Image 1 (cartoon, rainbow, N blue to C red):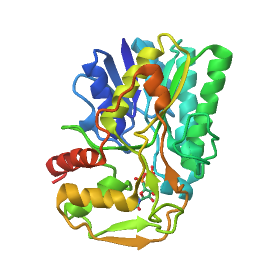
Image 2: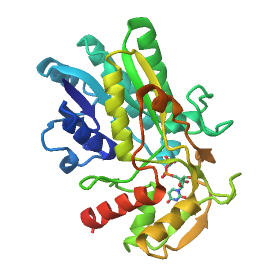
Image 3: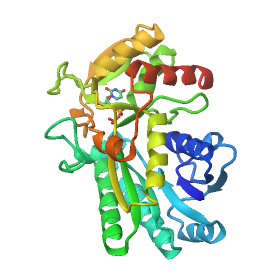
Length: 322
Ligand code: UDP
């Protein structure tokens, strides 16, 4: 089966595209290269450079290629940016998802794997978070993804559209050939590693007055290859089932300070840190229960340790971004 991977020139999309090829799927990558890298698109994937806002280009693609399913990664992802420019997130993440879904409906493609997020949960009432917990995003990024999830719910309910929504907690780590390379970089682990690499002076800790054990935000870091295996399982499960919603995390929370300490261990660099104001929109703690996907699809993270996750990112960064 040929699958369409939107955002397949980006960090998670390119790694999942490579895994899909390895699992025997034919892959077409669609990306507008606004944030992605052409070089990250795996060899063996067809590449279409277009924007999801271009409906004619989507119609052409679905007419010309026998696409059996779509995995939709293309999106803006930075919480801080979403707080400053909410409209662009609703345009890019919500409206463009609708555009893609309408094109799929028009061409009879009804299998969809959606990159959703822990940001849907906002400040959770309890951790670990389960999929039925309240969805109350604290930033436009999370809201833009929630709107897409609500659209998917109704397409399934009214039209039998099949979808899996995978709510990633904090994607991290790298493969031998692909890793995280956003411009500018906002994510914690790559920013810490930039300090170890001598490309930044120190790591800024955004707030140490949160209601957490050491006052810094707690997150659940999950290896990008474990996210990739979940996508393959979800795609297979859509053969039988119509609506799947799963958290993807390791069930372990690490504070910003603990992540910095782990990076010091892995790199041997002192990594100076300084405390700054909170970053608007950040929930204090996000830790996943992933019992549902473990129980229903047999998902088993293979790289759950924080040091191993950071180690893989560090190895890749030293090779690729020297
Ligand atoms: N963070 C930080 N300094 C940085 C980047 C991030 O203190 O330079 C914090 C951020 O405020 C959040 C956590 O690290 O509490 C994870 O942020 P990231 O942007 O990596 O992922 P998010 O949780 O926003 O998806």
